[in-house]
Image (cartoon, rainbow, N blue to C red; front, side):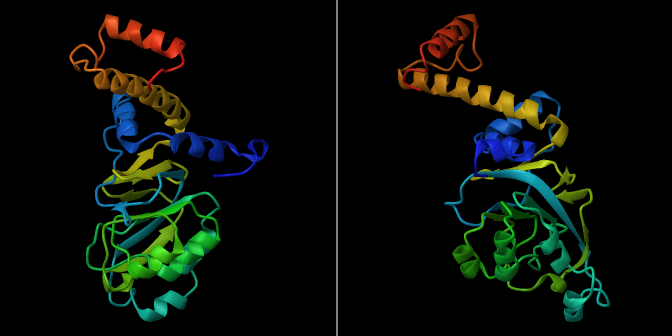
Length: 245
């Protein structure tokens, strides 16, 4: 999400703001707003050094495979998974509903490379990926349920893109925001994204204050969560420019 600020779209601006907030913080902020099912179970960073990334979700759906549907010939048919790869917009994160399978991979190095060439921000799948050594060379952040050698047709059939899906036990609508870091992937409902970005930034600011006081030897009782004295200390700390934060 780079470029001149005057060239930013609202989605790019929100993505940049959300990418500054940890998924741990986002889950807490969402929880305070009644959203409990936001963290995807299964997808984790394929490589531990992956940067935090955020972007609107471009959803892809697979269904359990059936022998007449999931064939090598299906890759070349109109309306195949290849069409979804070509439809993924710049700056978006492809979120793949792979039915939570562990038997086959939804994405490999060639499709990942094409996503990067198209400007995708990342790929997320609740199923494995394959060609891991080659994916590392591509450099696109990938969050997946590990690795598996078999291709998708070993267990899945492609069903379409751009619709409501379930990934990692979480409902993901096209245009919701996905944020991924070392703790996994969190989905932020699109209608709440601005509010969550603002609240998340404030939460992280407060936690920097808490860390500064913990380093000074303060106990967490009365500090996290804060009592009135801690809140007054926090206001002074903010006014002083976050010293030691």
